[in-house]
Length: 270
Image: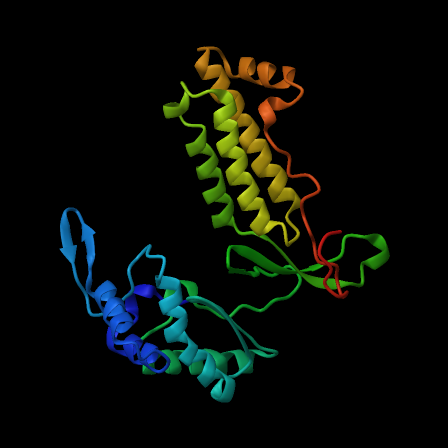
């Protein structure tokens, strides 16, 4: 992984100018890069980096890192998979992986970039191994639990530990004390909106356990909110929630997962 903050402005503009000749558009992009970032009431301007949180930042990163993709196609080692500033190089052997890491480091250095040390390592995907995180998913090589297919191993994925923690934090925020005076139905609407979006991204994986955990967490937080509204113990909120057949409209994520089938062509749905 590399950082948006390290992309050199001169190199980025040169990459953009390979395809764009409109002077007004180029001036607009330069202006966005030079606008700086306000922190603690002071504006900081740098010669590197794209606007943090800016909607155009992923696009600009892709424009610049496309040079990495082109160079890797002819000089790289293994298969490079990149999404914005997050990437994985897939190799067949440890020796090939070492060469890929060296090639990646050298190529990025030529672009004025460097991989983040904390998130750059060589991982051996084998049964019982640690796996790797990529795009919010934890990827692991696992063996089928079905007794009929114990000989089958495949790459499984589910929300990473960090993704799960962010989801729990968001649910906690949506059911916080500052919402005690809100109608429960409105709180549930916001919860459902988040849960649908979160599940829509992570449904393409082996995420049943994680989905159940997040729904249980949302259920507990909603029951706690109801109890606090009435200044009653937590069990009161649980009783009120259970007494509602519709549970205030809180959605269920059961049946929403589209898990890939081991060693079979991809098919959406189950």
